[in-house]
Length: 225
Image (cartoon, rainbow, N blue to C red; front, side):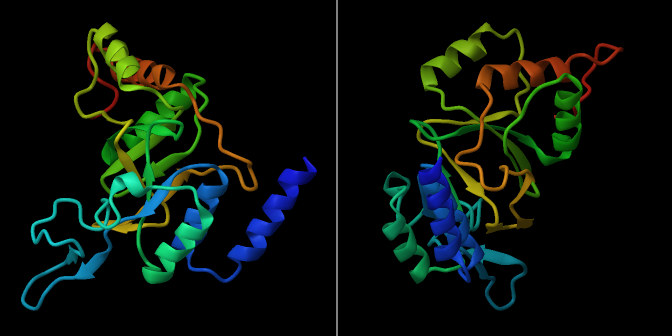
């Protein structure tokens, strides 16, 4: 316990005064979550509206919220590399490389997010961190492999088609990153000072979401996926 507390003190001291993205990235490093900087937003050109992406794709579908340079395989927990990346790009989004020993996630449309969490709370489902963006909410879950996910979905008679699974080879934008439409935030944040956030099992989360979406009295869906 003395070692863990000492490490937390060092983390607080070395992050003092740093920009929010690198602060968040270093926290992930302490949790052994591999991260990397994503492509950032840039102002749209003259005569156009909104914002664009710093990547070369002029029609990028996910501006400011995807890997570019470095690529996803470069994700790391190395504190020195993280500091170097964000010293070059202090406002870069923080991306979590999901899968392997890192957290995975199940996401659903933002319009259904509040109702989904309310339904899971009512069912007594224990949740870990939940990331909210203007378009999707993501429930972080314990690591799982693609084979296990395939078996899990195969056993289900029906799974909402709008659910997305962020596992091996995937990524997730983490707060306080900026993306088109607004900033990512913690709808359910990690407990302050926790050594590493607790994560539920993917099967429990999927079971609860399927149950919540098919348990309306008229046989319809409680959740507007």
